[in-house]
Length: 289
Ligand code: DHB
Ligand code: FE
Image (cartoon, rainbow, N blue to C red; front, side, top):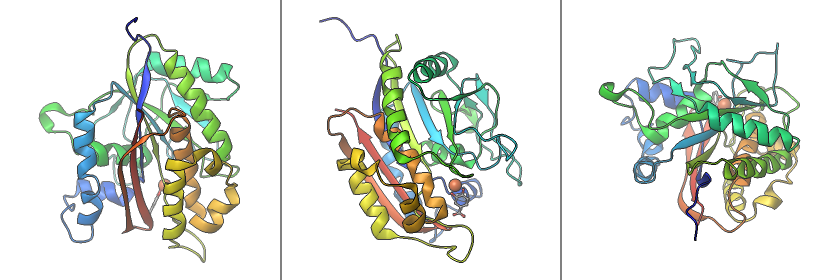
């Protein structure tokens, strides 16, 4: 047998990105009664990440009119730069480390995925908002001042779910498959984790502001585990109707799920909690066998 030389996707992580979670962390409120149950759901995950350290995290998130405004709206944007700074979202940048990228792997994925007919925008410079920094904080905790850095390089992958039209679940799922193929053709034995972030049900605007749909969310989690190809066919209007206008963020989870092997994954952790700010927090870890 020859030694394995290509990169591979070892696991996928799914999590909400609620900005108020970042504020709770930064202001030392994690043990307050409101927040304690939210952070308790990530205790297992922080240990799991320490026990299963990836070489690179491919992090799918959405920008909230921070790096991209109505001036320029890429459907899919891959960060190929060497580093990305935490954005100032109105209260100054979060006190978290800068994100170190992996330009070589990111460029390889861009090459492979674009040749596979997905139009990616290549971004060498951008700031990253709570969509990316809150999932990192939840999974990694706050890095100590003595070693103020995230545990590994991160490739940011931004998806437009803010300004219509957003990409369909089917396209996101197929994109995940193309990303898997790209990673598996990278000629270095890197362990890559793919994270799908955002969600779950929430609506921040209009008469239905505050909408939460526990049943629909939990059914989404069930189907993400057991029948992702069928889940991918759910049309965007069902997300909006059932999970609220911001529930459409969940299509990003289908990119991460599509990047997993076709064989059944191992469910390592599943967590669901209401409320956290205006959303239902959902979180899951799946490992490839
Ligand atoms: C909230 C949730 C989000 O996903 C977001 O981007 C902004 C705010 C909220 O729960 O308030
Ligand atoms: Fe959001």
